[in-house]
Image (tube, rainbow, N blue to C red):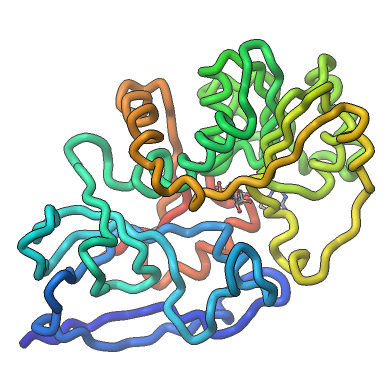
Length: 346
Ligand SMILES: NC(=O)c1ccc[n+]([C@@H]2O[C@H](COP(=O)([O-])OP(=O)(O)OC[C@H]3O[C@@H](n4cnc5c(N)ncnc54)[C@H](OP(=O)(O)O)[C@@H]3O)[C@@H](O)[C@H]2O)c1
């Protein structure tokens, strides 16, 4: 028997506004490595995903599921290595890199059937959390199946410099669309324009109201907007509703501007549904988990694009398990570029 010291971030308090360290408690415990049951593996977490949906699930209200339970380990995707595998029938072996959903803990015991094996010789393992992971799944299927982009159309993307947004803008370019990217700093805009080839960029922080940003978006795309891929909501979305074209498709992927309180106490904005009527437009919400069983289909298209450099990606990697709650807070201050994750230092 060997006892392994484990640390876990336990979600202990529901935030009313922005999430911080005070909503989590660090717990120390032990794992007895001799108790791994048949069909299970012991993992050492190496990279933890940090995602906006974690804050959605902290709302007091049901969303697509019940709120994240208090006094449990913060759930989330993890890239780790298998230390012990007690499943001779599985393709998972000791030493393998895997993707799991074991959350914010240094070590975890899980069923091998819940692991996805990664090939570190093909692409860096961190890509399983971003450019070839859940954000890619919703970027790809959300744009292709809800957006149905056609060559020459104009696609506007809010949250364009984030994990999902950077992928959406690039797929839209691959599909021959004109792309307008909206993000929160000039440095992010420069990357979108100069590296990812986005046609027009707008820093939403320079506009105090939906009316002002609307004028700027209209100037950037006088031909109007055929597809709006919304990661943010709020006044950016209010402005875009007034600029949509006939038969426009609006894809609601996220509403991050509303997560830090607005989900429990909604902020009222302009009433814009009349634009949907005039333009015979559609609005569709999209959820990554609805495409779980189509992961291989997405990877078969996106892995070659990633390997040959047609798809570029940024990752913001914060060192140290102890910094996980701080990293989550960073998302709501725009401190990440591309996929945000935390790296183990042990
Ligand atoms: N439907 C699904 O299945 C699904 C899956 C994954 C993600 N999502 C959603 O997609 C969105 C992006 O997720 P992600 O993982 O790619 O995160 P991300 O974009 O990498 O990170 C969040 C970014 O949101 C921006 N932001 C934060 N507060 C904002 C505000 N008040 N107004 C405008 N922008 C704000 C910040 O960038 P700036 O510097 O530009 O402000 C920040 O960097 C989120 O809304 C998320 O919930 C949905």
